[in-house]
Image 1 (spheres, rainbow over the protein chains, first blue to last red):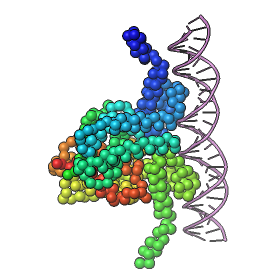
Image 2: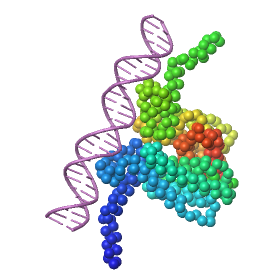
Image 3: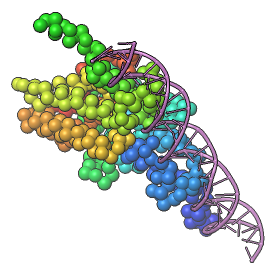
Image 4: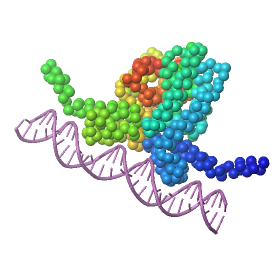
Length: 204
Length: 204
DNA sequence: AATAAATTTGACTCAAGGGTTAAATTTATA
DNA sequence: TATAAATTTAACCCTTGAGTCAAATTTATT
Protein backbone atom coordinates (compact mmCIF):
# COMPACT_ATOMS: atom_id res chain seq x y z
CA UNK A 1 0.00 0.00 0.00
CA UNK A 2 2.69 2.39 0.99
CA UNK A 3 4.68 1.34 -2.03
CA UNK A 4 1.80 2.10 -4.28
CA UNK A 5 1.43 5.60 -2.88
CA UNK A 6 5.13 6.28 -3.12
CA UNK A 7 5.08 4.88 -6.59
CA UNK A 8 2.44 7.34 -7.61
CA UNK A 9 4.28 10.27 -6.08
CA UNK A 10 7.57 9.30 -7.62
CA UNK A 11 5.98 8.84 -10.99
CA UNK A 12 4.15 12.14 -10.66
CA UNK A 13 6.77 14.14 -12.59
CA UNK A 14 6.37 11.68 -15.45
CA UNK A 15 2.61 11.94 -15.44
CA UNK A 16 1.80 13.16 -18.87
CA UNK A 17 -1.19 15.34 -18.04
CA UNK A 18 0.78 16.96 -15.26
CA UNK A 19 3.72 17.59 -17.56
CA UNK A 20 1.41 19.10 -20.10
CA UNK A 21 -0.23 21.36 -17.54
CA UNK A 22 3.12 22.50 -16.20
CA UNK A 23 4.47 23.30 -19.62
CA UNK A 24 1.32 25.09 -20.59
CA UNK A 25 1.58 27.08 -17.41
CA UNK A 26 5.16 27.98 -18.22
CA UNK A 27 4.04 29.25 -21.60
CA UNK A 28 1.38 31.48 -20.05
CA UNK A 29 3.77 32.86 -17.44
CA UNK A 30 6.52 33.57 -19.94
CA UNK A 31 4.03 35.24 -22.23
CA UNK A 32 2.66 37.31 -19.36
CA UNK A 33 6.10 38.63 -18.51
CA UNK A 34 6.75 39.48 -22.15
CA UNK A 35 3.39 41.19 -22.48
CA UNK A 36 4.16 43.24 -19.38
CA UNK A 37 7.56 44.27 -20.54
CA UNK A 38 6.98 44.91 -24.22
CA UNK A 39 3.22 44.90 -24.63
CA UNK A 40 0.93 42.36 -26.25
CA UNK A 41 1.30 43.50 -29.82
CA UNK A 42 5.03 44.01 -29.56
CA UNK A 43 5.46 40.37 -28.57
CA UNK A 44 5.11 37.78 -31.28
CA UNK A 45 4.34 34.13 -30.67
CA UNK A 46 7.79 33.45 -32.10
CA UNK A 47 9.27 35.70 -29.41
CA UNK A 48 7.51 33.84 -26.64
CA UNK A 49 8.55 30.52 -28.11
CA UNK A 50 12.20 31.36 -28.50
CA UNK A 51 12.30 32.78 -24.97
CA UNK A 52 11.34 29.29 -23.89
CA UNK A 53 13.79 27.63 -26.26
CA UNK A 54 10.96 26.40 -28.44
CA UNK A 55 9.67 26.97 -31.91
CA UNK A 56 6.40 28.74 -32.57
CA UNK A 57 4.51 25.68 -33.71
CA UNK A 58 5.39 23.96 -30.45
CA UNK A 59 3.51 26.66 -28.59
CA UNK A 60 0.38 25.79 -30.50
CA UNK A 61 0.53 22.33 -29.03
CA UNK A 62 -0.16 23.94 -25.63
CA UNK A 63 -2.44 26.84 -26.50
CA UNK A 64 -5.16 27.44 -29.05
CA UNK A 65 -4.12 30.90 -30.16
CA UNK A 66 -2.57 34.13 -28.98
CA UNK A 67 -5.86 35.50 -27.76
CA UNK A 68 -6.21 32.52 -25.44
CA UNK A 69 -2.76 33.22 -24.01
CA UNK A 70 -3.66 36.81 -23.21
CA UNK A 71 -6.98 35.69 -21.80
CA UNK A 72 -5.30 33.12 -19.55
CA UNK A 73 -2.91 35.76 -18.27
CA UNK A 74 -5.84 37.86 -17.20
CA UNK A 75 -7.66 34.90 -15.73
CA UNK A 76 -4.72 33.88 -13.60
CA UNK A 77 -4.31 37.39 -12.27
CA UNK A 78 -7.97 37.51 -11.32
CA UNK A 79 -7.83 33.99 -9.90
CA UNK A 80 -5.04 35.15 -7.61
CA UNK A 81 -6.97 38.25 -6.63
CA UNK A 82 -10.10 36.24 -5.96
CA UNK A 83 -8.19 33.95 -3.64
CA UNK A 84 -6.88 36.95 -1.74
CA UNK A 85 -10.37 38.43 -1.62
CA UNK A 86 -11.82 35.23 -0.18
CA UNK A 87 -9.52 35.41 2.80
CA UNK A 88 -11.43 36.33 5.91
CA UNK A 89 -10.14 39.32 7.85
CA UNK A 90 -12.17 39.00 11.00
CA UNK A 91 -12.36 41.47 13.83
CA UNK A 92 -10.95 44.41 11.91
CA UNK A 93 -12.50 47.53 10.52
CA UNK A 94 -12.95 48.19 6.82
CA UNK A 95 -9.82 50.29 6.53
CA UNK A 96 -7.58 47.68 8.11
CA UNK A 97 -9.09 44.92 5.96
CA UNK A 98 -8.51 46.99 2.87
CA UNK A 99 -4.92 47.68 3.77
CA UNK A 100 -4.20 43.99 4.33
CA UNK A 101 -5.94 43.14 1.09
CA UNK A 102 -3.99 45.69 -0.86
CA UNK A 103 -0.74 44.59 0.69
CA UNK A 104 -1.46 41.03 -0.41
CA UNK A 105 -2.29 42.23 -3.90
CA UNK A 106 1.09 43.86 -4.25
CA UNK A 107 2.87 40.88 -2.72
CA UNK A 108 1.15 38.59 -5.19
CA UNK A 109 1.96 40.76 -8.18
CA UNK A 110 5.62 41.13 -7.28
CA UNK A 111 6.22 37.57 -6.16
CA UNK A 112 4.12 35.17 -8.18
CA UNK A 113 5.08 35.81 -11.77
CA UNK A 114 1.44 36.61 -12.36
CA UNK A 115 0.99 39.83 -14.29
CA UNK A 116 -1.90 42.24 -14.04
CA UNK A 117 -2.19 43.25 -17.67
CA UNK A 118 -3.86 46.40 -18.82
CA UNK A 119 -4.27 45.59 -22.48
CA UNK A 120 -7.88 44.44 -22.31
CA UNK A 121 -8.65 45.90 -25.70
CA UNK A 122 -6.48 43.40 -27.49
CA UNK A 123 -8.70 40.55 -26.38
CA UNK A 124 -11.37 39.10 -28.64
CA UNK A 125 -14.80 40.61 -28.00
CA UNK A 126 -15.99 37.57 -26.09
CA UNK A 127 -12.99 37.29 -23.81
CA UNK A 128 -12.90 41.02 -23.32
CA UNK A 129 -16.42 40.91 -21.97
CA UNK A 130 -15.53 38.07 -19.61
CA UNK A 131 -12.45 39.85 -18.33
CA UNK A 132 -14.23 43.17 -17.86
CA UNK A 133 -17.01 41.36 -16.03
CA UNK A 134 -14.50 39.80 -13.65
CA UNK A 135 -12.65 43.05 -13.17
CA UNK A 136 -15.94 44.77 -12.44
CA UNK A 137 -16.85 42.13 -9.90
CA UNK A 138 -13.56 42.55 -8.07
CA UNK A 139 -13.83 46.30 -8.25
CA UNK A 140 -17.31 46.19 -6.79
CA UNK A 141 -16.14 44.04 -3.90
CA UNK A 142 -13.43 46.54 -3.10
CA UNK A 143 -15.83 49.45 -3.38
CA UNK A 144 -18.11 47.59 -0.99
CA UNK A 145 -15.25 47.26 1.43
CA UNK A 146 -14.64 50.99 1.20
CA UNK A 147 -18.30 51.69 1.93
CA UNK A 148 -18.10 49.35 4.87
CA UNK A 149 -15.12 51.30 6.13
CA UNK A 150 -17.05 54.52 5.73
CA UNK A 151 -19.90 53.03 7.75
CA UNK A 152 -17.69 51.88 10.59
CA UNK A 153 -15.97 55.25 10.59
CA UNK A 154 -12.50 54.05 9.61
CA UNK A 155 -12.56 55.52 6.10
CA UNK A 156 -13.19 59.17 5.34
CA UNK A 157 -16.08 60.44 3.24
CA UNK A 158 -15.83 60.81 -0.52
CA UNK A 159 -17.01 58.91 -3.57
CA UNK A 160 -15.99 55.29 -2.91
CA UNK A 161 -15.44 54.67 -6.61
CA UNK A 162 -12.93 57.48 -6.89
CA UNK A 163 -11.19 56.24 -3.77
CA UNK A 164 -10.82 52.86 -5.44
CA UNK A 165 -9.94 54.08 -8.93
CA UNK A 166 -7.10 56.02 -7.42
CA UNK A 167 -5.30 53.23 -5.63
CA UNK A 168 -6.16 50.58 -8.19
CA UNK A 169 -4.40 52.77 -10.73
CA UNK A 170 -1.23 52.52 -8.71
CA UNK A 171 -1.64 48.75 -8.76
CA UNK A 172 -2.16 48.59 -12.50
CA UNK A 173 0.88 50.74 -13.08
CA UNK A 174 3.01 48.52 -10.87
CA UNK A 175 3.64 45.82 -13.44
CA UNK A 176 4.83 48.41 -15.92
CA UNK A 177 7.80 49.50 -13.84
CA UNK A 178 8.43 46.71 -11.35
CA UNK A 179 11.47 44.63 -12.09
CA UNK A 180 12.26 41.40 -10.28
CA UNK A 181 15.93 42.09 -10.30
CA UNK A 182 15.57 45.80 -9.71
CA UNK A 183 16.32 48.02 -6.75
CA UNK A 184 13.02 47.57 -4.92
CA UNK A 185 12.11 44.43 -3.03
CA UNK A 186 8.53 43.25 -3.53
CA UNK A 187 7.75 43.12 0.17
CA UNK A 188 8.98 46.68 0.66
CA UNK A 189 6.78 47.94 -2.13
CA UNK A 190 3.85 46.05 -0.68
CA UNK A 191 4.24 47.63 2.75
CA UNK A 192 4.89 51.08 1.34
CA UNK A 193 1.98 51.03 -1.10
CA UNK A 194 -0.44 49.60 1.46
CA UNK A 195 0.48 52.37 3.87
CA UNK A 196 0.17 55.10 1.26
CA UNK A 197 -3.13 53.64 0.16
CA UNK A 198 -4.50 53.58 3.72
CA UNK A 199 -3.44 57.11 4.58
CA UNK A 200 -5.09 58.39 1.42
CA UNK A 201 -8.52 57.27 2.55
CA UNK A 202 -8.27 56.93 6.32
CA UNK A 203 -10.67 58.92 8.45
CA UNK A 204 -9.07 61.87 10.23
CA UNK B 1 -3.04 100.59 -39.39
CA UNK B 2 -6.06 99.24 -37.61
CA UNK B 3 -7.36 98.03 -40.91
CA UNK B 4 -4.19 96.17 -41.56
CA UNK B 5 -4.31 94.44 -38.19
CA UNK B 6 -7.94 93.52 -38.62
CA UNK B 7 -7.18 92.35 -42.06
CA UNK B 8 -4.55 90.02 -40.76
CA UNK B 9 -6.82 88.69 -38.05
CA UNK B 10 -9.68 88.17 -40.41
CA UNK B 11 -7.49 86.41 -42.89
CA UNK B 12 -5.95 84.31 -40.15
CA UNK B 13 -8.35 81.40 -40.66
CA UNK B 14 -7.34 81.34 -44.29
CA UNK B 15 -3.64 81.36 -43.54
CA UNK B 16 -2.36 78.19 -45.08
CA UNK B 17 0.29 77.33 -42.52
CA UNK B 18 -2.17 77.93 -39.74
CA UNK B 19 -4.78 75.76 -41.41
CA UNK B 20 -2.26 73.04 -41.84
CA UNK B 21 -1.13 73.24 -38.23
CA UNK B 22 -4.69 73.13 -36.96
CA UNK B 23 -5.60 70.15 -39.07
CA UNK B 24 -2.44 68.35 -38.09
CA UNK B 25 -3.28 69.07 -34.49
CA UNK B 26 -6.75 67.62 -34.96
CA UNK B 27 -5.22 64.45 -36.36
CA UNK B 28 -2.93 64.04 -33.35
CA UNK B 29 -5.73 64.67 -30.88
CA UNK B 30 -8.13 62.29 -32.58
CA UNK B 31 -5.44 59.65 -32.73
CA UNK B 32 -4.61 60.18 -29.05
CA UNK B 33 -8.18 59.59 -28.03
CA UNK B 34 -8.36 56.45 -30.15
CA UNK B 35 -5.08 55.17 -28.74
CA UNK B 36 -6.40 55.75 -25.24
CA UNK B 37 -9.66 54.02 -25.85
CA UNK B 38 -8.59 51.08 -27.98
CA UNK B 39 -4.82 51.00 -27.74
CA UNK B 40 -2.19 51.90 -30.30
CA UNK B 41 -2.09 48.60 -32.15
CA UNK B 42 -5.84 48.19 -32.15
CA UNK B 43 -6.20 51.49 -33.97
CA UNK B 44 -5.33 51.54 -37.64
CA UNK B 45 -4.46 54.65 -39.58
CA UNK B 46 -7.62 53.98 -41.54
CA UNK B 47 -9.61 54.08 -38.29
CA UNK B 48 -8.15 57.44 -37.33
CA UNK B 49 -8.80 58.80 -40.79
CA UNK B 50 -12.39 57.69 -41.00
CA UNK B 51 -13.07 59.05 -37.51
CA UNK B 52 -12.11 62.40 -39.00
CA UNK B 53 -14.09 61.83 -42.18
CA UNK B 54 -10.89 61.41 -44.17
CA UNK B 55 -9.14 58.72 -46.10
CA UNK B 56 -5.93 57.13 -44.92
CA UNK B 57 -3.71 58.74 -47.53
CA UNK B 58 -5.00 62.17 -46.51
CA UNK B 59 -3.54 61.56 -43.05
CA UNK B 60 -0.13 61.07 -44.56
CA UNK B 61 -0.35 64.59 -45.89
CA UNK B 62 -0.20 65.80 -42.29
CA UNK B 63 2.02 63.23 -40.61
CA UNK B 64 5.04 61.21 -41.63
CA UNK B 65 3.99 57.89 -40.20
CA UNK B 66 2.11 56.23 -37.38
CA UNK B 67 5.13 56.28 -35.11
CA UNK B 68 5.29 60.05 -35.43
CA UNK B 69 1.65 60.31 -34.41
CA UNK B 70 2.23 58.29 -31.26
CA UNK B 71 5.36 60.27 -30.53
CA UNK B 72 3.52 63.57 -30.92
CA UNK B 73 0.82 62.39 -28.54
CA UNK B 74 3.47 61.74 -25.93
CA UNK B 75 5.21 65.03 -26.63
CA UNK B 76 2.05 67.05 -26.22
CA UNK B 77 1.27 65.38 -22.93
CA UNK B 78 4.74 66.14 -21.64
CA UNK B 79 4.59 69.68 -23.04
CA UNK B 80 1.45 70.24 -21.02
CA UNK B 81 3.04 68.73 -17.91
CA UNK B 82 6.13 70.87 -18.35
CA UNK B 83 4.04 74.00 -18.53
CA UNK B 84 2.32 73.04 -15.31
CA UNK B 85 5.66 72.25 -13.71
CA UNK B 86 7.05 75.66 -14.66
CA UNK B 87 4.35 77.42 -12.72
CA UNK B 88 5.72 79.02 -9.58
CA UNK B 89 4.02 78.06 -6.35
CA UNK B 90 5.53 80.59 -4.01
CA UNK B 91 5.15 80.72 -0.28
CA UNK B 92 3.91 77.18 0.14
CA UNK B 93 5.46 74.05 1.51
CA UNK B 94 6.40 71.04 -0.64
CA UNK B 95 3.22 69.15 0.14
CA UNK B 96 0.94 71.99 -0.86
CA UNK B 97 2.90 72.62 -4.04
CA UNK B 98 2.66 68.98 -4.92
CA UNK B 99 -1.06 68.88 -4.34
CA UNK B 100 -1.63 71.90 -6.56
CA UNK B 101 0.61 70.42 -9.20
CA UNK B 102 -1.17 67.09 -9.14
CA UNK B 103 -4.54 68.78 -9.26
CA UNK B 104 -3.46 70.65 -12.37
CA UNK B 105 -2.22 67.45 -13.94
CA UNK B 106 -5.60 65.82 -13.55
CA UNK B 107 -7.40 68.93 -14.75
CA UNK B 108 -5.22 69.02 -17.82
CA UNK B 109 -5.71 65.35 -18.62
CA UNK B 110 -9.47 65.46 -18.24
CA UNK B 111 -10.02 68.80 -19.95
CA UNK B 112 -7.53 69.30 -22.73
CA UNK B 113 -8.00 66.32 -24.98
CA UNK B 114 -4.34 65.54 -24.36
CA UNK B 115 -3.81 61.91 -23.48
CA UNK B 116 -1.14 60.49 -21.24
CA UNK B 117 -0.38 57.29 -23.11
CA UNK B 118 1.26 54.31 -21.54
CA UNK B 119 2.25 52.43 -24.66
CA UNK B 120 5.85 53.60 -24.81
CA UNK B 121 7.02 50.26 -26.14
CA UNK B 122 5.28 50.74 -29.42
CA UNK B 123 7.46 53.70 -30.27
CA UNK B 124 10.50 53.37 -32.49
CA UNK B 125 13.71 52.92 -30.52
CA UNK B 126 14.78 56.50 -31.07
CA UNK B 127 11.50 58.10 -30.05
CA UNK B 128 11.14 55.70 -27.16
CA UNK B 129 14.44 56.91 -25.76
CA UNK B 130 13.37 60.53 -26.13
CA UNK B 131 10.05 59.92 -24.43
CA UNK B 132 11.56 57.94 -21.58
CA UNK B 133 14.13 60.65 -21.10
CA UNK B 134 11.40 63.26 -20.82
CA UNK B 135 9.31 61.12 -18.52
CA UNK B 136 12.37 60.57 -16.35
CA UNK B 137 13.04 64.28 -16.19
CA UNK B 138 9.51 65.03 -15.07
CA UNK B 139 9.57 62.18 -12.58
CA UNK B 140 12.81 63.47 -11.11
CA UNK B 141 11.36 66.94 -10.69
CA UNK B 142 8.43 65.51 -8.80
CA UNK B 143 10.67 63.35 -6.66
CA UNK B 144 12.69 66.45 -5.90
CA UNK B 145 9.52 68.19 -4.80
CA UNK B 146 8.75 65.28 -2.50
CA UNK B 147 12.21 65.48 -0.97
CA UNK B 148 11.72 69.19 -0.47
CA UNK B 149 8.48 68.46 1.33
CA UNK B 150 10.25 65.95 3.53
CA UNK B 151 12.85 68.59 4.35
CA UNK B 152 10.31 71.23 5.29
CA UNK B 153 8.42 68.68 7.34
CA UNK B 154 5.23 68.69 5.30
CA UNK B 155 5.70 65.22 3.81
CA UNK B 156 6.21 62.06 5.85
CA UNK B 157 9.32 59.88 5.64
CA UNK B 158 9.61 57.01 3.15
CA UNK B 159 11.31 56.38 -0.16
CA UNK B 160 10.42 59.41 -2.31
CA UNK B 161 10.46 57.32 -5.46
CA UNK B 162 7.84 54.93 -4.11
CA UNK B 163 5.76 57.85 -2.97
CA UNK B 164 5.82 59.15 -6.52
CA UNK B 165 5.38 55.84 -8.32
CA UNK B 166 2.25 55.29 -6.33
CA UNK B 167 0.37 58.43 -7.22
CA UNK B 168 1.76 58.67 -10.74
CA UNK B 169 0.25 55.23 -11.32
CA UNK B 170 -3.14 56.61 -10.49
CA UNK B 171 -2.52 59.35 -13.04
CA UNK B 172 -1.45 56.95 -15.76
CA UNK B 173 -4.48 54.80 -15.15
CA UNK B 174 -6.79 57.80 -15.39
CA UNK B 175 -6.89 57.99 -19.18
CA UNK B 176 -7.85 54.34 -19.36
CA UNK B 177 -11.15 54.79 -17.56
CA UNK B 178 -11.97 58.48 -17.77
CA UNK B 179 -14.75 59.34 -20.15
CA UNK B 180 -15.61 62.87 -21.18
CA UNK B 181 -19.29 62.14 -21.28
CA UNK B 182 -19.19 59.85 -18.26
CA UNK B 183 -20.49 60.21 -14.74
CA UNK B 184 -17.49 61.97 -13.24
CA UNK B 185 -16.70 65.61 -13.91
CA UNK B 186 -13.01 66.33 -14.52
CA UNK B 187 -12.78 68.99 -11.87
CA UNK B 188 -14.28 66.67 -9.25
CA UNK B 189 -11.77 63.98 -10.07
CA UNK B 190 -8.96 66.51 -9.90
CA UNK B 191 -9.93 67.67 -6.43
CA UNK B 192 -10.58 64.17 -5.17
CA UNK B 193 -7.34 62.71 -6.54
CA UNK B 194 -5.25 65.63 -5.33
CA UNK B 195 -6.65 65.20 -1.85
CA UNK B 196 -6.13 61.46 -1.79
CA UNK B 197 -2.63 61.96 -3.10
CA UNK B 198 -1.82 64.51 -0.40
CA UNK B 199 -3.19 62.47 2.48
CA UNK B 200 -1.15 59.48 1.33
CA UNK B 201 2.12 61.27 1.88
CA UNK B 202 1.34 64.09 4.31
CA UNK B 203 3.28 64.22 7.55
CA UNK B 204 1.27 63.21 10.61
C1' DA C 1 11.12 -5.01 -30.64
C1' DA C 2 6.71 -3.14 -32.22
C1' DT C 3 3.24 -0.12 -31.71
C1' DA C 4 0.97 3.90 -30.18
C1' DA C 5 0.88 8.29 -28.21
C1' DA C 6 3.11 12.60 -27.23
C1' DT C 7 6.01 16.18 -28.71
C1' DT C 8 8.53 19.05 -31.87
C1' DT C 9 9.89 20.86 -36.25
C1' DG C 10 10.37 23.33 -40.91
C1' DA C 11 8.00 25.01 -44.40
C1' DC C 12 4.05 26.88 -45.71
C1' DT C 13 -0.60 30.10 -46.23
C1' DC C 14 -3.03 34.15 -45.53
C1' DA C 15 -4.93 38.58 -43.82
C1' DA C 16 -4.19 42.97 -41.79
C1' DG C 17 -2.48 47.06 -42.03
C1' DG C 18 1.38 50.50 -42.74
C1' DG C 19 2.97 53.16 -46.24
C1' DT C 20 3.34 54.87 -51.41
C1' DT C 21 2.09 57.01 -55.72
C1' DA C 22 0.14 59.17 -59.56
C1' DA C 23 -3.60 61.44 -60.77
C1' DA C 24 -7.77 64.30 -59.77
C1' DT C 25 -9.79 68.19 -57.60
C1' DT C 26 -10.09 72.15 -55.05
C1' DT C 27 -8.27 76.66 -53.54
C1' DA C 28 -5.27 80.66 -53.81
C1' DT C 29 -2.47 83.95 -56.48
C1' DA C 30 -0.73 86.67 -60.51
C1' DT D 1 -8.37 83.35 -66.75
C1' DA D 2 -4.00 80.89 -66.18
C1' DT D 3 -0.91 78.99 -63.15
C1' DA D 4 0.80 77.17 -59.04
C1' DA D 5 0.14 75.31 -54.67
C1' DA D 6 -2.63 72.74 -51.45
C1' DT D 7 -5.55 68.94 -50.61
C1' DT D 8 -7.73 64.60 -51.43
C1' DT D 9 -8.51 60.28 -53.57
C1' DA D 10 -8.34 55.30 -55.31
C1' DA D 11 -5.53 51.74 -56.21
C1' DC D 12 -1.64 49.69 -55.28
C1' DC D 13 2.80 47.23 -52.86
C1' DC D 14 5.05 44.89 -49.15
C1' DT D 15 6.25 43.34 -44.61
C1' DT D 16 4.95 41.28 -40.39
C1' DG D 17 3.19 37.89 -37.86
C1' DA D 18 -0.74 34.63 -36.67
C1' DG D 19 -1.98 30.22 -37.54
C1' DT D 20 -1.63 25.43 -40.18
C1' DC D 21 0.08 20.97 -41.51
C1' DA D 22 2.35 16.89 -42.64
C1' DA D 23 6.26 14.76 -41.46
C1' DA D 24 10.00 13.60 -38.11
C1' DT D 25 11.44 12.39 -33.58
C1' DT D 26 11.14 11.30 -29.04
C1' DT D 27 8.85 8.83 -25.18
C1' DA D 28 5.82 5.36 -23.16
C1' DT D 29 3.31 0.84 -23.41
C1' DT D 30 2.49 -4.10 -24.71
